Image (cartoon, rainbow, N blue to C red; front, side):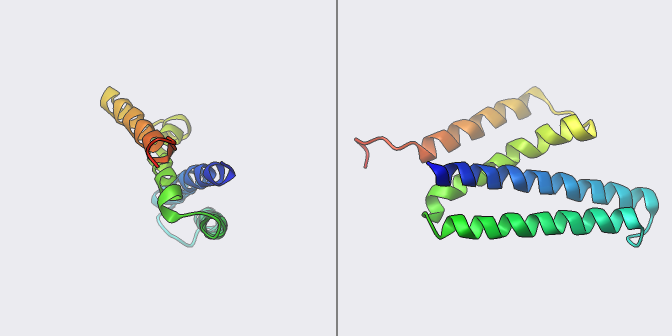
Length: 118
């Protein structure tokens, strides 16, 4: 169970990293150069964050099967747009939210352990 929680945290943390990369891209677009301090700080912050999450992911993989943990990476498909809506003002359609519910259902079906099916 703890491995599932850790995998879910990795999926969400990857989404946070994507938001950081988007902030870096916005700073680059607004400043016109990658050599501005805000662009470089955001880039190195996002890259460092991704590296830490990757180390944690490797640690989790040393404790459980990839096939059991990997479905939680789909949480990034949910978390990135939600964060981008609240932090960046992006909007999504009803179909997007319906698709998100299907992703959640898929993750649940994938990791649900039914004793009669094993």
